[in-house]
Image 1 (tube, one colour):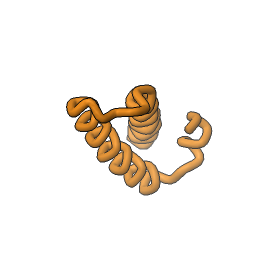
Image 2 (cartoon, helix red, strand yellow):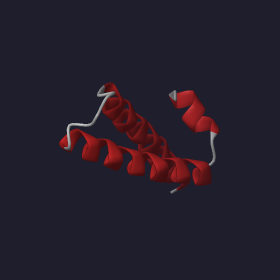
Image 3 (cartoon, rainbow, N blue to C red):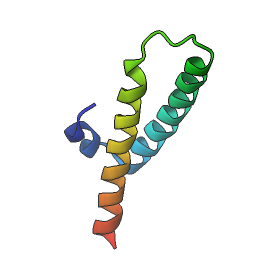
Length: 65
C-alpha cells in the first residue's frame, strides 16, 4: 500500500486496517519464534505499512489541532 492510497482512506478505515495489521504482525512474530515463518519479508512490509498509517493519522491529528 502506498502513501497516496493511505491518504485516500478515511480515519475509520485506517483504524481498522491498523488493527488488522497489528494482529498480522503478532502472528508473524509468533511464527518466527516457532521457526514456521515462510515469508520473512512480510514482517518488514507489515511494519512499514503500520508506520505509514500512523504517520498519516498523526498528520491529520496535528492538522486538526
